[in-house]
Length: 130
Image (cartoon, rainbow, N blue to C red; front, top):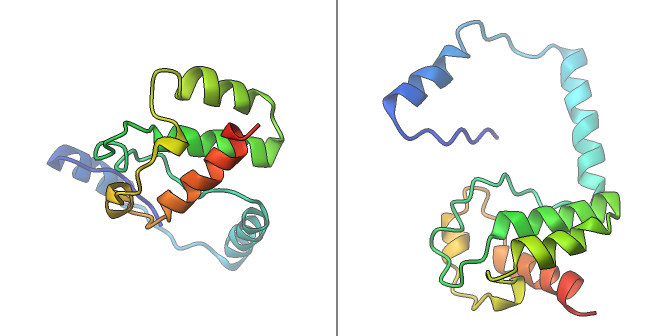
């Protein structure tokens, strides 16, 4: 699924221009895509596209995509910097994952239909319970 984030006619025309020479993937290319999908599905990744549609309605001003990126970085790369970025960059003077009040506005805005409230609980457990 492609989420282009178009908001005006010029952006629509720009996106359409890329389809002028459209060619479907051949079988070899499709198999490469399938292989990548298999690898990605084995990883513990939150499939957030960072569109930020979820953020504008959040009454606690939680930067949800940034917190999901920290979680993904930690899960994929086992990166200790993820803790630093969570605590010192993305939640300092801003909403933490545990600040979520469960209103569901984020989930209504999410084009990927992610279970954001449950995922924020996982993020809080990972970064805030030490």
